[in-house]
Image: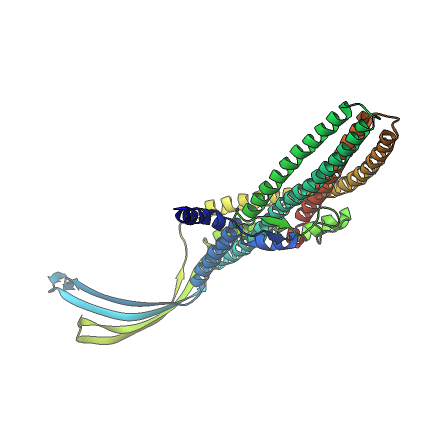
Length: 428
């Protein structure tokens, strides 16, 4: 019976074990690479494929058209002889032929083909835009995970320090150099540090899930950041100089290419609408067999040129609407250029502010560490109580957290600058 219970317990534990996966170490560069397979990018690639098919469909209108035509007709004819009408007997006509046609002059189809090609280019640029957005999402998610990991390290340092100072307080109380409340205060700091560590560890798990979702990976996977928050995390090909960054953004931002290609497509639509009001010229040739019965046919053929001249002006409204869409797209493109310039300048300001904030936070931590050292010496010498020491300990904890916050702000500013310039896929 005991053996059966052990076997059942082992089987019951199997699903839990199957759900667990080994931790996966991931760098920011690897995360950016994996972001290229998320759903929005795949959808953008499919949109480009649809646009490519549409371009092919428009191009087919400029290629030779080959048709096989077969038919059977039974009709009654009337014949005039000396002013008298004669009704002839119904006759059958069997006709089978091969027809080849080629447009020689069709400006409407030509310009619609050009418009489809521009829309294909815009769709491909939209794919690049989705890659940028996916890289930014992955970059921010990675920054969140690295920040949580750094906070865990800070909380562990706080807990270690709190336990160390608790031991010191107990020794001072036992030696009669301090009151018992010193131990209580130190125990309170240990409890607070333990609570903060638990919260930070929860943030790490949450950050891992967020990163998995951003990369379209299994959320059950435990990700371990391969990069540290400090240092040059989230550097990219974006220039740090504001003038260079603005100039680079005007060249690399995929939104600008989307806007420019869309404008070119609408301009081609305008030319196509004008072309619909112009004559078209087609050449054709066909040949086959025709006769009253299937087994009684003669060979026939025709070669010719057709000129078609529109008599009713039905496309002038299409031309007018296309002209307004051209003006509309120009306004949007100009506004986009101004917005990109503003985004780049704001991103550079955020970088400079983040760097300055980090320098201040590091100096604040240095002074907090010095304050703690002096308070500890005074407490050990018995010239001060541990209230001053506990306050110094709390100040150091806050200073350490501010360093992490400042580092996170700087990393996020780097990601923002890369996105503003249009090089988020180069983040590492």
